Length: 301
Ligand SMILES: [Zn+2]
Image 1 (cartoon, protein in one colour):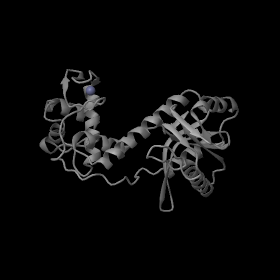
Image 2 (tube, helix red, strand yellow):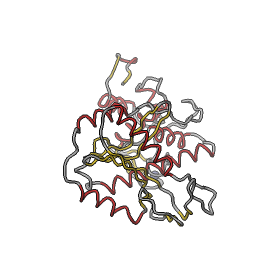
Image 3 (cartoon, protein in one colour):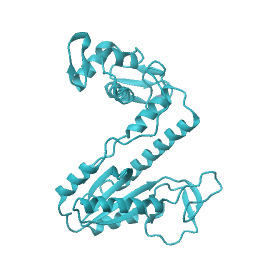
């Protein structure tokens, strides 16, 4: 059973909006693409385990603070008395194994993720110990991309290569016999230790005025949309999405990018490119948020 679902990370929502609405420097674009790729591979993993670990406790996308350092866990599965940490890597192409990094003909030479996994295991162990949770910890790295090959690989039980993923998940499913003890305590501790305010990489500077206004297609990012009563249709890729859902996503973008500003009908009207009727935006805000104040001074939380 999933006790913590994966949601689109806040920094990805921010960077996607900025990517669509302003010109980014190459390094910011790279940061955005790596966030997107990371989220996509995590969703792929979620699909693979879906329905296969129902008797275990699953917590996705956890962030903890240990001393002054933060660390993240892509997925934590607790089965009986073992906590399995899963780090998901989406490397593609061929690499040669190295203790410090994987080498390849490409410019990109990723760090050997085993070193990070050992640190993550130790830090989680410290948290469990401090909070009186008695679970063994095992850590795995799932290389989820089927186009990934690693040469000269010594036997490393923590590595799960693309061809081994199904077998590994099936083994977890088969070996579950009794329920996790102290479930409520584990849920409480993970909930309390999970950090919501993770410090993001510094964003490129932006102002409301600088950013391109309007709704963009969630599939191809084109602003060339045809608005219908219930849905919009992208003129470029024909993708359709329910209007209310897209407006709410735009409000969420605004709320995250301009966290100091109030959410008002007129501001969201401008944010949506002045193409959606004010009444429609008002209706949408009223239905989904709490209105504070009256008449023109109304804002939503
Ligand atoms: Zn499109």
